[in-house]
Length: 334
Image 1 (cartoon, one colour):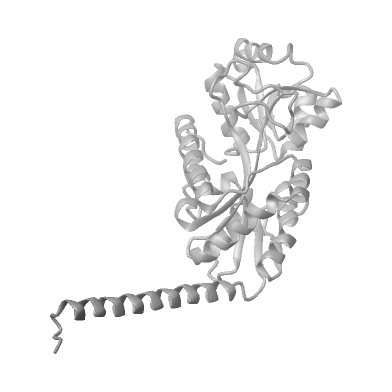
Image 2 (cartoon, rainbow, N blue to C red):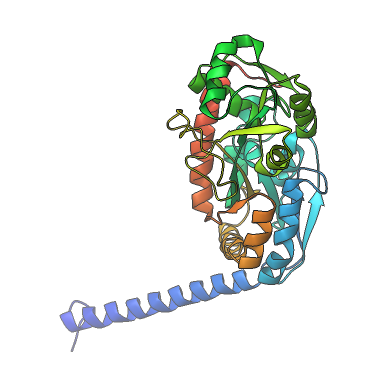
């Protein structure tokens, strides 16, 4: 008669336990797959912190329908403009319906709380990265009256000292922080002049009220091609396919200088991680489709389509770089 201590009995019991464990594991996996298949079970909201027709809005509308097809539910773009996109970002951070996402610029996910401690949400703790959709360099642009081209403009800026002004679409914008980075790298002392938006910055450069600015390629290059402004250099590490004829600032003598603007999708930090991964995988596939890639390229963007982890890494890196500039220059919102 076998006893519970007999080796054959122990082997049989182990096999039974292993079989039960395997069955339980399959059951859990099946349950997870069922939960995935059951979500979303109603339309999703994609909040955008800028008005209709803005660059983030156009990107949101480019991905909304393909994302709806991938997830099996409508994706409704909802504009919540205000505070440079932070109104919408805060609404995403507070959402608890499990069906709210946000399309955000990098400032909303990196510097918002550093720049203004009164910001009601913390990007690093209240938002969950989903996917970095697309990136673009900025173009260091100068008025037509500024002497020289390329590296000569950098030299002229050093010689001008505080006699030069630079324009931005507001305090704490990426263009503002980027210009402060550039001043440190190039030895400039140019004075900041904020405007309500980039159209006013462009007009100020054309009129000679400010000498330089960092602008998105889609805004800068039509003015350059019309002869009203000069493209000095790009903030990307190397040349960009968006504007291949313009050298990088690194080529012009500022090695290591790099700054990009980007758009990404984020979710509330409390959102189910499995749902975040599902949206992330869908977005990565969507932005790589040739028709979507071409549409975003025409809007002035190069697609990225990262994983949630890839966006999280980018947020951490950019936050650290921006924090140093903000704190060193004591930048605070007006």
